[in-house]
Length: 397
Image 1 (cartoon, one colour):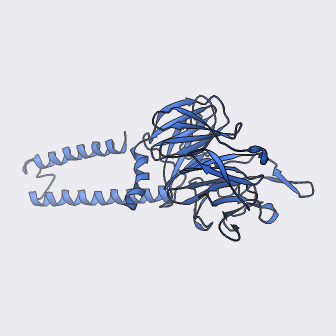
Image 2 (cartoon, rainbow, N blue to C red):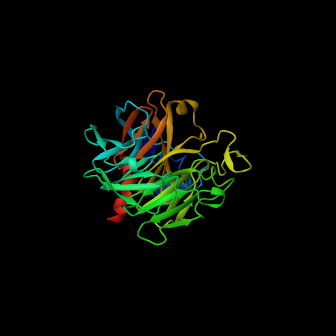
Image 3 (tube, rainbow, N blue to C red):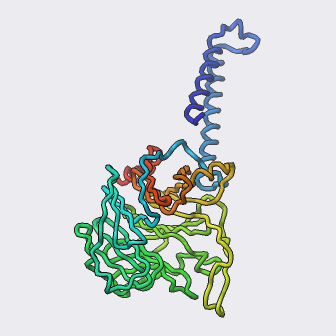
């Protein structure tokens, strides 16, 4: 029984009881209610008002606990998403490069200069080849990002970032003066937020590269908080949202994410609802402390993330209270957070396609897209989620 049905059920029988009391004649109720009709109305009204106040207070209290002081109890509303289509991609080397109003773009690790565009309406696929003279640049780990009307060809091991227009898919401009980086998200054609290993003892640090400024790179070494070694314990995922013009960095191994502005300043840090406050990793030092590696498998807390305007979607790998093994065997769990209110909203099950592993997710105001093995799952957002995204638009208007 849903919350709404439960409320209607209770109201119906309370109404029946109230009607029965009022229909009884005073002679029949003389031994039960020693008062006149006006007093009976007063007692009934007082009880209704008092009970309503108590229920509202309990609801507000429980809502505050769930959103801000969560004891790791997930809230699963009824079907926030519904499966729309499954597309066979044939290969498992795809990742999400970005989206625009009409299409979703997939990059391919095996064929880095090729993009697959999928129409949001028709679900038709289109193959696109980026025009670029790759002989001049020795790429080893290329990633593509789509931002608005532009695309970006990036490799932090070179390091290099090339950009061009989606109108001709030609990489015409190279950003110069870039440092080596391990993660990067373009903000515009001259500005990139990135993560480098330039901190003390090669620790991770987040900074802003701006080709029009001098110096071109500005780091904020206080953004990523070291717990063990500053490398593995600060590893995570970097995302950028064009609509809100902010970046989100989510740690892999602890229950924390940070929100960053376009000048690499911290807006705030917040926690995911699980209880893993410290990264559970073991680091081994090799070759006279010149190399480091994980000496045991790390316990991942947050596996994959996506940001859509004011919402953060996190694929969690940690069991919550009262959750069954069957639920986790059949699905991936996605937790949703509101970045404006810094609160937990809800969770939902992203059901597995066969027994394939999830490798990436992206969310638009209408759909959630998930790559599982060689398949692309497309899921339509229902009103419960869409209204949370649209709440940002209503505030702006």
